[in-house]
Amino acid sequence: MKILLINGANLNMLGVREPEKYGKTTLNDIEKTVVTLGNKLGAEVDTWQSNSEGDIVDKIQSTRGQYDGLLINAGGYTHTSVVIRDAISAVNVPCVEIHMTNIHAREEFRHTSLLSSVCIAQVVGFGEHSYTLALEGLVKYLNS
Image (cartoon, rainbow, N blue to C red; front, side):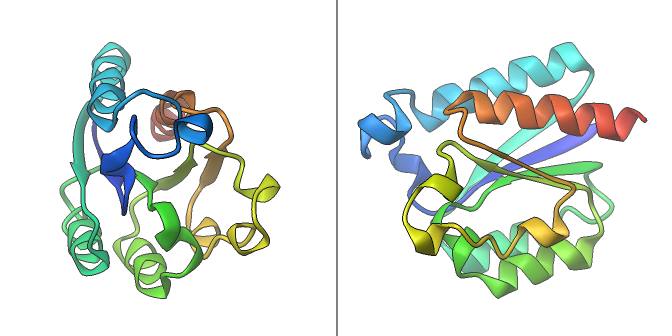
């Protein structure tokens, strides 16, 4: 089983950016944890990050026929990107949307996700643990 974890804009700044909201754990640390857990669950997890919307679309499109599942934290693009939503829909690869904070308890513009309707699930509000919860859920979904 192959899974791709995509992280979007500004997530490369984890550990530095607003640690009171996002904690002090870096993206690299989160990726290592997800890859390690993936191995324990029988899944090969690749990780990738970009601040560029078009690059994220290209990467999502590359999952078709290459990956069994997709994990995505699109960051702010969650609330603005129709093209990322359309790319997820087009590839027909089961996808779980991830957010470290509870987007429904933050600023009103963050309450709407353009991605959730094309994802099998959304995991929000558990900090860095949102990633491992999303991976566990996706693996269970793919194994069922």
